View 1 (cartoon, rainbow, N blue to C red):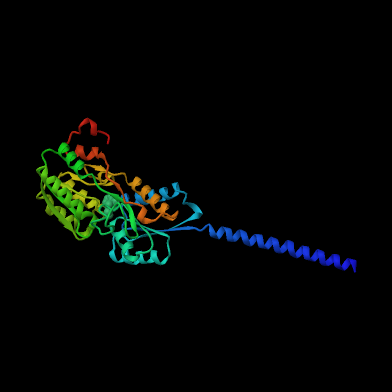
View 2 (cartoon, rainbow, N blue to C red):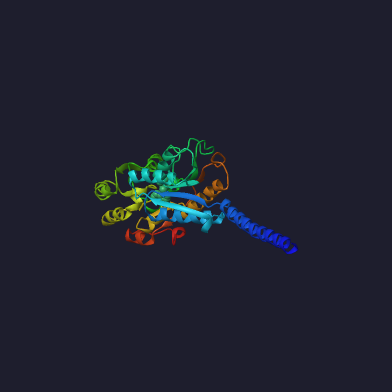
Amino acid sequence: MKNKSLMVVLLALVVLLVGGGLYSQFGKTKEKASQKVARVGVLQYVTHESLDEIYKGIQDGLKESGYSGKDLKIDFLNAQADQSKVQSMSQTLVDHKNDVLIGIATPAAQGLANATSDIPVVMGAVSDPVGAKLVKDLKKPDKNVTGVSDHTPIAKQITLMKRLTPDVKRVGVLYSSNEDNSKSQVEEFKSLAQKEGYEVSLYAVPSSNEIATTMNVMLGKVDAVYIPLDNTIASAFSSVVSAAKEQKKPIYPSAAKMVEEGGLASVVINQHDLGVATGKMAAQILSGKKVSDLPVEIFDQGTPVVNDAVAKELGITLPDDLKDK
Ligand code: TRP
């Protein structure tokens, strides 16, 4: 009898121990699951090096804010400048139930904003958020959209153009007719350059296929070419360069990469910095901050860059302060 009750007590102990162990195991997996993986959907409009640099910056910005490795799942898509892909990929990123969406370049941010009015959308480098109808008030976003804006220092670009090529009188502007980011930059360039006495003519292309022929028409009529932060032109910049090179005319683009690839000079915004700021803003939203408490962050300060080799080819002697820039 005594032995039997001892057995019962022992059995009960075993049950308790095993059960308790199982229970605490259970508790652990539950704990892990509640530390949930942050899901970020990124749509890049097209491939060109400036946008690639922004994407790199976004990953760095998220990491600096504590989102990386297994705590983060980035759902990355690239629409390759195809408007129907912008639409379908935006929908895909919404369907994947991402916590935050990031659009790199204006058309991508517009696609995402059209696809959802609930999930927060962070603009990655949108030149004119108001003109692109992404936000009404830069200081007080009232919908699900905020982010980072790159406003080219156009006045400084014109000052640089005056210094480097004082003989230039007629400037042709090459841009894409279907990028809202280019429209406002082109208007701003036109009015500021005209005030400085330049004769400005505008050349819009429907796609990168028309760049070469448009350049050939334009180069017969202008002394220099100006290019805004335009994705279509940036992604096919080599055709701009080869046309201008033949005619020995300077190109003033708006991004460092385009200067590197054969433009003469510019005053440019650091692309990696834009990405880092975008990533950090997305991180703030992941950590619970509301879009309405996050004003659009504007980058409008630039640094001068000059392509020495192109200056040489065009017979331009660089002022001392612009050498090695
Ligand atoms: N600001 C552009 C837009 O609104 C995107 C962009 C960022 C860009 N960096 C660039 C375009 C460099 C051309 C070159 O869409």
